[in-house]
Length: 195
Image 1: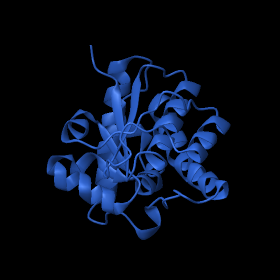
Image 2 (image 1 turned 135 degrees about the vertical axis):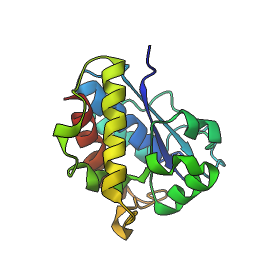
Image 3 (image 1 turned 120 degrees about the vertical axis):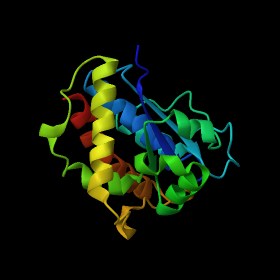
């Protein structure tokens, strides 16, 4: 049996942006009946918050949007996390560079969150395998979406506006904006993947 399509979200500390993205993608997938078909995980390039729970304003945003904030523990990014992922979404271009420096072979499946979301709408759905409600179908469709976005990116790479600002130590308004920006990518991706 095929393993769930795995999405790895990466930020610096793994207590704000990447856990929000992890849990908001999981909620978007659950909302479309895809529980168990996608594995949404996260890690941080810094590692100094390892074992900590989600930052409280980040957790508030996740809960306010119908996601699950409990049971989260920050972890440091490792090469095997990258190896296990079918798609890696980073908060910033610097973190994209970090991932690719660690695992150069992951460049084709690593994107800045905003870049991935920006290119998602240009994917020709007619070229994708049909959506299904089993792990094999979802995995095949997810891999095809990642490949399509890699080709759409071409040599341009991320743009300055694709980065997610670091909301750590800032107010709820900033966390709300970051939550909106994350959902601008995770919701359409879940929809494309599962419908």
